[in-house]
Length: 563
Image (cartoon, rainbow, N blue to C red; front, side):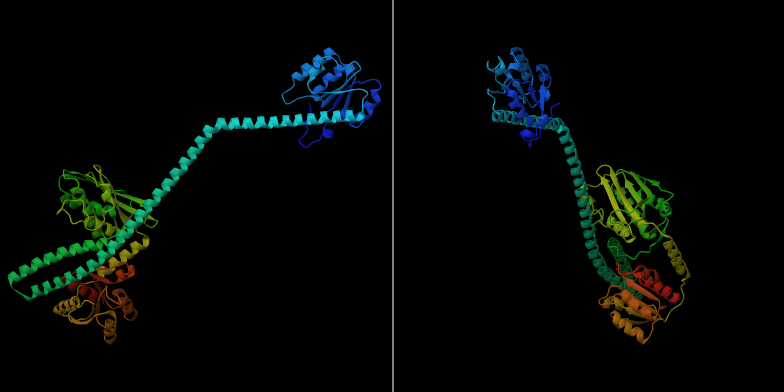
């Protein structure tokens, strides 16, 4: 095997042998001296056969003309023609007296040296042959690299389609992932906008309901006083009509406050399955004979935190909505289950009450508005648009949420998510129940009551009602004035409004509790927001505006009985 020199090798560094075919005569001495310079690279061949057999390994061949004839030239020419394209084997012919052998021109790369042989001419011929062979080896290496490159290119071309397919798949997968992230971000953004909108509407609604409740309370109290002060049947009948109108207005503000999550809620441990089972008769009467009621109650569902009365009202509202969506009749299905909190809910388990119908469904464009106050898909005059908003408010104020899913022509499902009751909640509920059972109605006439309310008309009305009931009453227009009166003489009972400028009712109660921890207190309000802590609502009595004189009398008697 011929050793291929690197590109940087010189002619004298080549390791392939220099074949010499037995020169004889007087040139032997000159030839020997020159060849000695190339050391063991020189390989002398005894005859043509030895020379021919070593050609594949040689760098060049030095031949005496008299050592070959026409037949040998033909064999050498055939060998030259069989060489690869990069090879142009160099021959050096030492010409004889009779001239070059016949056929030597067919050898291709031939250098003829004439006698008498000169050393410098021989040296140049050998070095030139070796340099030529090095360039041929370099060309062979370059061709080899080119073949490798062509093969690699062929492989790339053969696998191009599969690589494009794989890359396209990767891009499609990355695009799908990106689109999922975009959709998730859009859903999150939409939920945030909806939450902010509902919060803003809730704050506005709660404020309006508070002012309206004060007006209703003035009307209600005035009607009660008029009714008690007259024996005229006609005046009492008119007062009764006005009282019914006030009751309707009170229900309206109750719904608004429920949406605003500002309604006074009696949150207790509630057996949801028992509550729904007990509502079957009520739902049957309310929904009519054309509506079938199906219950699928999971017996493993734990107790939830809820106001049982408000929860019944919410389920009844959902049932009536379902009935209205099925004018020709259908099926309402009540389902209970437990799921983990998701979305805007805190982490934990929630009891789910699902109310599903087989009605006409709701258009997708309206789904984002169904919980808004006064929005309704019913015809004009068929609904106030407060049912679902009240359901939403009750669920949110109970620590959960309300969700809706609907498809046109396939019905609607509304879910109420309620917090699962913990062991501490059960204990607190039992304690509150025991305390309520201990309250008794006793004769408390003549007790001293301090009333604090910033609305002069409301305050004067409450004072007059309490005086009518036989109590001694003092009054103050704000928290600071009320605390000064309290320092002058401790009352038997404190009645305070919640929403007041400067110091609200909760802050007044905290100041009073610091000096008179056992003083009975009634928080009279039409609006209770997040500033009222759960502890305050558990320990103080809440009188929801608007109230009539009988409600006021019962609450005062119970509070004084506690003292």
